[in-house]
Length: 149
Image (cartoon, rainbow, N blue to C red; front, side):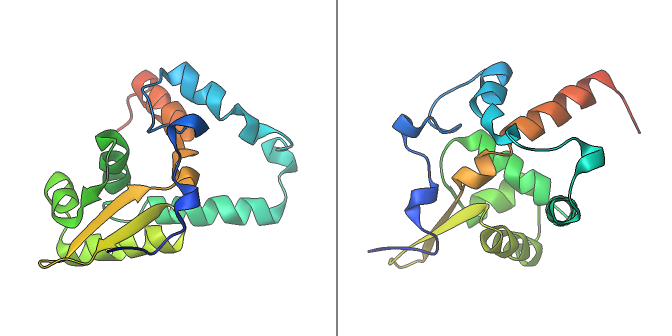
């Protein structure tokens, strides 16, 4: 029996064109999610509520191992088990558990529990998390052009 802590409707299917359903170039990723910019004002006209939402997201993403966890979940193109994420990131079990719970609470990952012995739990990004892909692409492009210490 499979139990999911999240609604499966947030996971993309191949016909929804999710970032994980097929390989895309950076330009394809940006084009795919360009619609997210519709109606978004320039930074100097951004409402306070939107600024707070972005600040909260950045606070979550800058916590210990948060970006490492998301990086590996995005790069794997498949659900990962706790021990696989732990091995890939080097995060302690306590910190990894905290981040995965925070990501789940924020709607960025799904947690799927299988009724087996030993317990089998898998994690993967939600559609909402995948919509962050263009932002990450721009950050990686920026980092490629600017070497900061």
